[in-house]
Image (cartoon, rainbow, N blue to C red):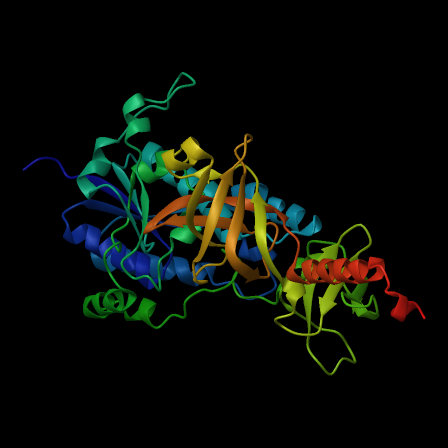
Length: 416
């Protein structure tokens, strides 16, 4: 028998990464579990479960009889994710920290630590996702030095690794992986690729991982947890009070503590208002936050958007898009939202315009537009510009109709 392949598995203290490590060991690999700390709980007065999560990950590694390490990226997370987050909020956008964390921390610093420092042949995580390569293919890419020229290996360019949805479509996490690099993907294994969450829980129960099974799934901001967002963000940004303004007639409805505490589509807490009002737009030059009286107000619906330079997981845009500058595919900007058919237009600067087959509620600058073609996740781009809302278009149509009526020549009878 040949030498054992060494796989470093990212351990979060949750059921998915625990089962991922177990499956890797059952496949005969030499596995090392590593827990990554990205947020310094000593700075937090709120709830933070980092220490408990680390302890849970350690217990799993003990029961599997595999080495356990922990590594801290608190400084990197602060500089590369959290500081960026604050700047985006100040610009009136709503960033996605989970996508950014995977891009800058887990599949960059952490992945490189696994390969270059721990000497791993491959990196593994508990994400529900698949790639176009078999596990053995992953090891073919091991220890390749980064290119010293501007051009990548031609074989790599012709044979990029593609990212596909996991077998459990309800748990599929390709959305969160849509900004990771081709280099990282080539050396990553997803042991849960073909499994459902229910089956993963069954494996965990049979293995006796009861301490991770009973934990609630984390739903808060990546590595910050479930905290009151307004209270949290105001610990880092100075309050900038402004007005809630009705989008319909410009009435001042109330006051807010800062546009960065609010995102499009959310309910606005306006004192003295019996009915619900929802955030539909922001003007950071005046501090005004525009609100509308119903959750499905036409001011919340748009069908066009532009991204910044799009990140294609396979490095190059799909051949169809390169050839014709247009392509039909599917879009989402929130994890688990239904996929919407769309037409993508490629711009000269690498950005894309996306035209949706139907208007979508609360498209939000700063979020990521993630594109799919069948089961393949093509990549993503940050939303930087929105087309007009349905309300704006309605107003424009009504204005045109009114102007046309006003300009109609009057008949003699009407004039008399």
